Length: 363
Ligand SMILES: Cc1ncc(COP(=O)(O)O)c(C=O)c1O
Image 1: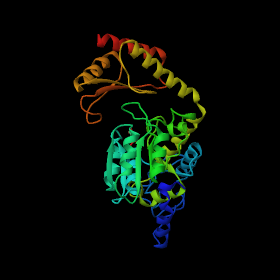
Image 2: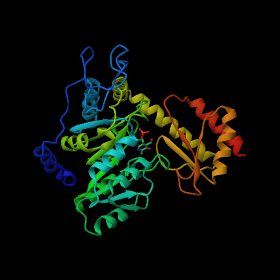
Image 3: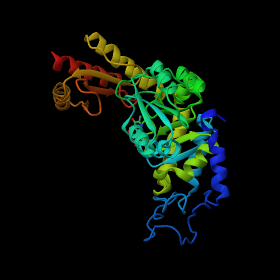
Image 4: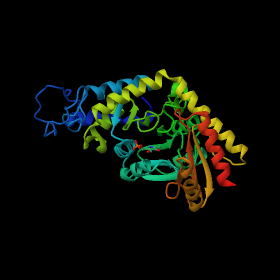
């Protein structure tokens, strides 16, 4: 058990002693007569196969075979003991961080962490120290000062607005030196980056205490998960409010995400094509004298003022290219950008045409 989460075993025992530990309820089955779901009109089961809706929070009666199958497959894929599926990445981060950290704790958070991480930190009521982007020295300094019940470090593995990554090995070491727990959100990396698309923690050989991923990005669906030890998942099952007090993720969606996951595992070619398109895009931008940020399948191009980013996107749209301008508060003031994303559905000639259009618009 990682030092940072060692306390969970005792906390779970305390819950059990108080008779308050929630265990998994029996599965909700098609054809079974239920008197404890919220599917008042019986519409959740109108299709064949998986139910459209879980019918209730999974703690109450919303536990379906599709949830369990997806969580098992994710644990096997990511080589973690256990996984818990949430309805979104936003719910996963807010639920996990606020369930794990408390008012006596310290959270050290990268200044560019996603809003869902920021909100999770706020809801936890822990002391939050925001550190400069990717700065492990600052993480070490922040972890070292003051006296706290527990310490947490939270980061993304592949920042979606800058396409850059922290040194996960260094962060792991910094955490281990202080008995802190490491929380890594792999939302944009999973499926594309790392060995077999298993993310940048896997690439670095780092085991985070808490691993967050979403299905809304490379897996092409919606929903998300938190993976780690069995105690972590048991704790979140009992204490993550965005999980406990919310209808379980759609079983139909869970079944489809399981199919997408098997595609991710089987189709190394999709990953290769995506990264080839990204390389083509990056090389083409460099040839135009532009400097895309970072690495990998997200290709951000900083333009400065919001108006410049909006104008570029507006001029590309009539030429048939959907390009998103990113402005404050999503990014710091004065760093508005367009954020190009590579995908396996793009053909090489699509990238060439975009580059040609960009060249003509910028000229
Ligand atoms: C790093 C990161 N975490 C979490 C989320 C939220 O995930 P979801 O869209 O599944 O709510 C996003 C973006 O949406 C993200 O970029």
